[in-house]
Image 1 (cartoon, helix red, strand yellow):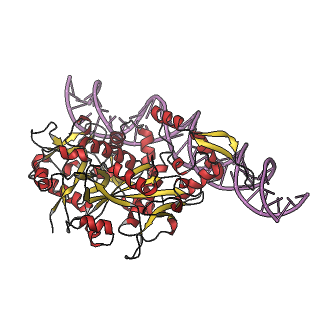
Image 2: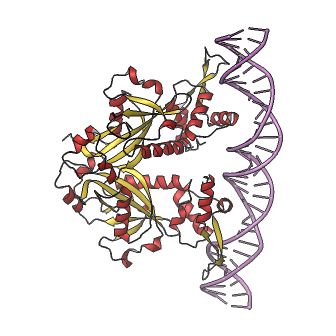
Image 3: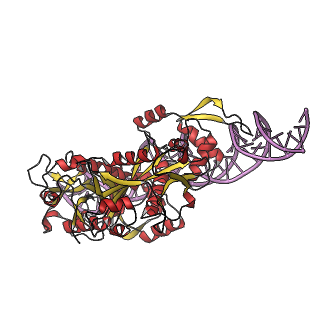
Length: 240
Length: 240
DNA sequence: TTTACTTTGTGTCCTAATTACACTATCAAA
DNA sequence: TTTGATAGTGTAATTAGGACACAAAGTAAA
């Protein structure tokens, strides 16, 4: 009844931002394969919705709840079944050797502070790796990562989802660097500030940075209420 | 070896444009279910790539080759297995009663003249139905249709894919009505013309409409070479 | 052959958005 | 008190977007 479905898996591209660059959570699969790193993922249960499965996989891995998740799409072609090294996958698939696995990929945005690899005690430990440093991954995960990066780029041009990658309180410079990291191109500082302020969805706090060896920066928070109000009115251009 | 996989299907949302409104190909499933109409779709073979399966389903249905196809995403939750009326699906699923089906949805854009239902002699006959008239479909197909419409809207704001819905030679008015139908909002005639001409990807022909009871219109064709040249240069704003 | 009907095709003005660009202010640390 | 680092700000020029009305070219009907 509540069994794993050996034909369908979910894989998650979990992005984090360290105030300088984008990072992704990857899992070390050991050394019995050409590419040791893989995206976190798992087979799904027959009783599960797709989104639930992705949420579950991420919570099992990182302990994070209420995670921002978005589907990227379905991947997986017959070649997938030739790579037979992931032990869990092998075990599940054993009964039906000719089957293939379709994987439904998700991307998610988390605050990096919410998951610190070795401070957490989960079975598989994932680690943060800079997106730019990844040029090989197990299975078709490199393709999935590319699609995730592209989807994120497109999405952030339309919706203010970047705030999921920042702490509650953040500076405009941090937000600026985040957009540059995602879009992979420099954005003029003054033009960026003007534009983001005109969107009218961030609120300055009565608080500044302290302890920094330079002029302390104004802190802001994302005004979710105002954003939702604007979208309800039909406003939909939060683009860059 | 080359068997149907009873867990994974593809469904296709095939859009056509009759110079007035958007239409979708639907199949009449007979009367043994609450909602008789469904999107064309089928289970996939284990040896098939996902895209291949979608291409195959469409070619089997309409005979059209070289179709424009784009994945929308994966759908399907456990509820799906409770609706047990599609005979083919039942038969395929019989051996494994507790399984669920994930469907990978695609949307495709075709020139309506390429598929005229009763002129073709395929087993299942699909028919064109105005998108606006559809408010019920079998399974979760209404949800898929909504997602398809939304994806198409977003996509046409970025890429010039609309030309797949028009014949080789078309008028600016036809193109104008197409954009209005997809975006579901009126666009100013003069501003539309100015903008589309500035994109510089359509070429006027040495030819006009004839036989029309009004001023004959200039005919244009989509300049694919120029479009690809522009994208290679890094230009990517074909938006509306 | 004239008139009515229908759709094509065009230009300007105004406002909003985008781009490029450089210097002063404020803090910690040396 | 000097140095080093980042924050924070305005303007001018260009480009894009939105609103708007009328003459031209064909067929069909009188």
